[in-house]
Length: 230
Ligand SMILES: Nc1ncnc2c1ncn2[C@@H]1O[C@H](COP(=O)(O)OP(=O)(O)OP(=O)(O)O)[C@@H](O)[C@H]1O
Ligand SMILES: [Mg+2]
Image (cartoon, rainbow, N blue to C red):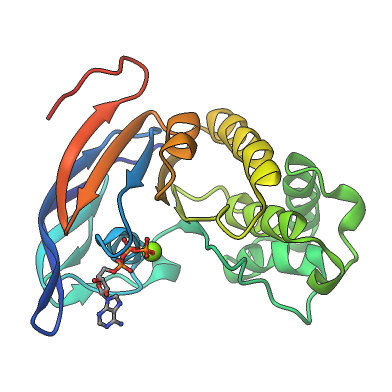
């Protein structure tokens, strides 16, 4: 099922430092939105609010018609049906690739027989079928990030969240993995929010680019039409 994301008047502060200032944003079901902006503008903070890793000071966040956060209250990440990919991969070093990817299915109590099929399918989608039995330490950075990607999509979450997933990789690899992720996101059709400070990455991956500047939305443009709106 495709899910819209709506933020109404969402603000966030670290002490006296206002990091997000009354953000209003509606993300269409199945679209890929890039959050673009300079370091410190609040991109990761906004993504963490969508993930349920932190709660807003003011405002509300809805996934479709479900309230997931409001001032002082937040539905925890495991109850949100999301998949996340971070800059630093965040794989469990003691688990094999297959065990890492299987983890979200265990959390959701998916039956064992189905788990194995789903893991095999997710690994195949990211081109890692042969690496199922390896530990993360035996993989390159790009391969580790593919594992994180497989783990994010394996349970077919309603929302995918990415925080600069390619910025630890060298430029050639970044380019090719970016193209692959764009293709994968189109195939999956999942609503996705992709944080980056790289305009080119945003243009390859996203249907729409939302520019954040000092905690506010400075510009909002559709990629397919290049037309400014909102
Ligand atoms: N734990 C914290 N305590 C206090 N201030 C913080 C904390 N984390 C972030 N900030 C501040 O909040 C602001 C927004 O940070 P955020 O991490 O959302 O930025 P960002 O856009 O993701 O930047 P980058 O591109 O460098 O990752 C920054 O000014 C930052 O200094
Ligand atoms: Mg950040």
